[in-house]
Length: 180
Image (cartoon, rainbow, N blue to C red; front, top):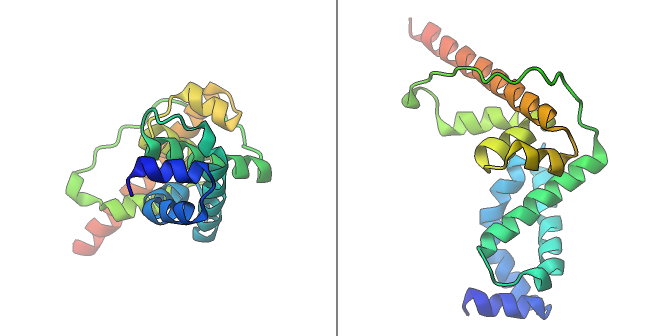
């Protein structure tokens, strides 16, 4: 069955089609949940909630644009909505948005390590960092999604970059010290 037929069946709330759609896309959408969740368990919960919202919102999908992109947007919004309900974003100085210079050789830091330290960022910084750097949203869009000012989005991104830079430099220093 093609994706268009599957979508049509899901719009009619066909449970078998919904199950097939879940199996087809869960492995692609789970990493998105991980980016916007504090824990693995929370990411699993967010994925389940997002799929419920996807199935509920299916009639709104008009077969225009990327279906996977449409689902990804729902996943991100679901995770952020849950986060907004449980915590309040801490507002930090709006004047802190000069991007730090980071010069690292590609082979010095692994992708796995980068993902690990991004996951360790405080929630507010991790979410802004992921939305801006990894998902390509503008600061204006992020501000609207998180109900914060554009300046706060910029300063949270800058602070996330400083934290990541410090962790990378610390890791490189430790690696260099061990090899001496």
